[in-house]
Length: 535
Image (cartoon, rainbow, N blue to C red; front, side, top):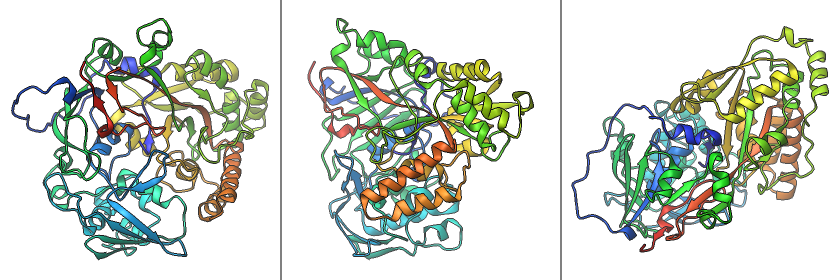
């Protein structure tokens, strides 16, 4: 998801589901009518339009939700969130940990029947790296491969670290041994695409020729998106013939209650209703831990948050425990640090910047501004439409007003712009979230806060922390590596690189006749595992 920046804000789900998500109205050609499918052949879900279905470009949870069903890569994350074979049936790693040799299956085909070979992966990755593709993820997820950065910079046409040994053997050389490299290849940027499809005219991904367990059958924007079972799939064949996403179809909870959809997430507005043990939804409810992190980011290159004392003051003026309890009704867990519970390297002993109004005021007094009256105007960037601001952000702004005497304005970016333009368009602060792509601290600490990374939206830079993160990334002793990551996390918290807010959970309702709908801690189900019993 998965990088997944998450700009689905829990308390906005109800309001946003009533809005029309505007995009240019382009759709696949409607399919011809056939005999209606039986209940057992169709899984009905709520959805919103993806921003893109191009794996090289996608950088948001909503798009990934569909891409994960339509495309695939060399490896995927297994039940224990460890890399397991996918299109690659096996691989070998050299003694120095820098060369990976992948042996591809010989029964993998694109949706149109064409066989997938090693050259398709090299093409896909070189396309992702090409400057014209404008991928915001390729440097992060493929950047360890030798030669990738030269292609990104326009200095080379081919990735020198990718060699085709034969039709079913692909060799990859990386710049240093890294324990998480295989996990990076589970991210959509590394998925294989069909060259003829990707080089066709226009937005080719509206009719994608993927390799995943489902094909795109129909997409009518703001209305309907239908996935169809791929009978050529090399893995576990889907148990349903169709997955029908009702796009912007109404209030998801109401749709679930009336039987229009089979699964729904639960927003804050309905938490009492679904947790009532005597109510009709209690036995449908599952609470799934999520490796996610919500935070306020600071613009480190613009006053006043170029001053560490101001960052610390704003951090210590927010009572996160109170917000988690009163605003979120304990649907989230307040965060002192960056790594969520369940993540390797999670540190119970981490020392956070605790809520302390007096200390916050002292920090402002010792800053270069001396007093709040000397602070420049402050604006926070968030996702939203037409003035709808989440309850939690309103509460945070109120705390700054009451505790510090500071007024903070809000500027909204439309959801389709927020993630892809945040780095360029952020104001003084921004409210955002992140879900793990793979369970490794590198995916949080390094990806979000190392100098110069694509997802370092606040442009934080600290050479000493960079050095710690780089040491941790190449340390082959796992225990020592995690210690280094914990040290880096503590330094980031002390420096108020961001304002950690809370770690998330998923509250999901699933109809009793739905089997195999298992949401991972990364926020995704694999829909080919789902079956619908007669009902």
